[in-house]
Length: 263
DNA sequence: ATGGTAGCGCTGCTA
Image: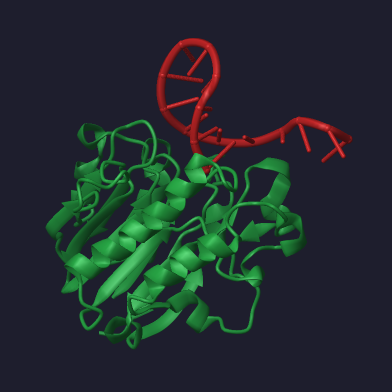
């Protein structure tokens, strides 16, 4: 079973690239973030033509998450279950059961600046994610939570930690909030497959030639419950997909993160 | 070099 998570930064713009990528890489489950389309405009037919079912949660302006699977898309849930939470109606989370695995595609708020209301909302969103898991899942089941977490868990998950003084994504508060999610019983499977290296990065700023300077961050994660994490056979970032295409087709600022599981 | 890019959508916001 091959799973990919990819912040696609506009599905409308990136659909040809995604289709080509799917045909070349044969993923079983595709988890997207930042589709930036409304549910009505989600190109479900393009994916069904490739043999995939899909589900989407977006309003067309910002955010937007999707699950595309050829192992089934069952029991879809969108948003958070607790409708009283401030985060309940943002288009940042969708889940479905695909081939027996409960899969989540998540797009954690950016936070903008440390201490801002948006930063507080980011911490609260992660806390709500943990509560969602406590309410709906068991760590003994096969659970996969992947997406753009907008948090670098360790200093080696950024190109130069000295450049991040006072910045978001690396604060103890954000790391702690994400660790609280992981403490549900989830492993960071890319890190487990790459225990002794910087990165591998999954995002590079569009500005200032960051990609070609290697100035990236590892913020797109695949978290798996222990029963699922045991089956991981490989995990990697497809850096090629971050490059400009042959027909001057622009890339997302994120690269796809691919995880293979033994059957 | 004290900025730079990209997407949405038409003005400035978000990242």
